[in-house]
Length: 145
Image (cartoon, rainbow, N blue to C red; front, side, top):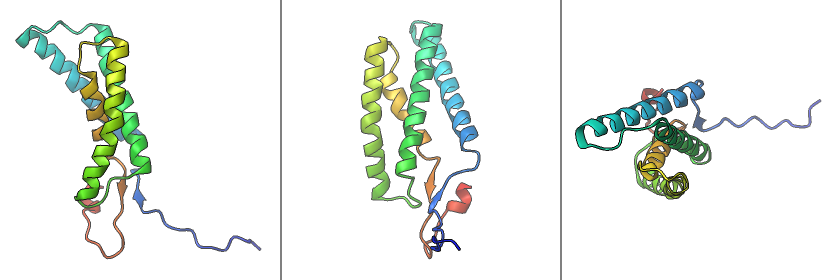
């Protein structure tokens, strides 16, 4: 007979079954948009044309930000309802993301705004894991699925 007879507690966090695919699709979309942004910026404003090294810097900032956002959402999932908790959550996510972005920009010597790209990517990817509301609360979780 088993000594552990306590019932298994149900998790109050919704993790999508295809989380890796969603994260990959999000990061590829952000990267493609930024590549296009810098190429169009070259023709419209005279920015230097992005070299493969510049594109690698942008892609690395997006991936690092996406992973930071995913790790952060594992520890503090997105609340089910808008409110003050979401504001504090964004604030506590963006502080280290900005620091990592500035560090990446300084160490790589980039002309691109990696200090903004990394927090943007972290913020967008931190919404993939959602906290399920308590029993009796109205929720839009069904629409999030």
